[in-house]
Image (cartoon, rainbow, N blue to C red; front, side, top):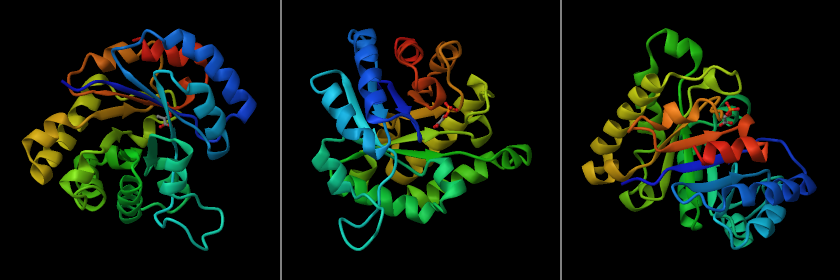
Length: 249
Ligand code: PEP
């Protein structure tokens, strides 16, 4: 039985003061939410405020990226051991915005994922196709490529620390959601790839989240799909009431 994970991706929104205000409104709304695990992935500068506010609660905290070296002359970067020392549980790797705007590739996704796990973090690893690729019936091929180059190079022990987020790029921040059936099909492809690389048992326990314009009014139909094990939520996670409705779907 896979426990759903509801993860917020705040992207480049909120100050530390906004973060504290979010948690004081959000925590009471989700304190009885035992059906799902909850994570908030915040900008680096908000992590101390998020960790302080979430201490002792049922909400864990994560970052949105990391660099693969532990330390060194890498101006502007943040490492896995730094995030772990702060108290983070999660880190997002390979979000489509990092692939589109910051040169992330499947190879660097793999390097970041290995480094995160070596530091003791759990990874939300994002995959998904662009609109042109879906329209050209390339969704499966893209997932094969992203999985083959970005995930299959993990060891079985590393793979056990990974949650995959399937995020069709055309559905992120656009208000367009994949239908629950479209999402479930892509999740099945990913689970087949996981079974081929890591075996049936590892594939059966892999959590696959859906991401792309998840909102309080569509979360229930998405979560009704057996293949969907939670959500990675951008826009609708910025407001405590709206993210709590998603968590309490
Ligand atoms: C995301 O940022 O991963 C995301 C899915 O964004 P949104 O929910 O706004 O589409």
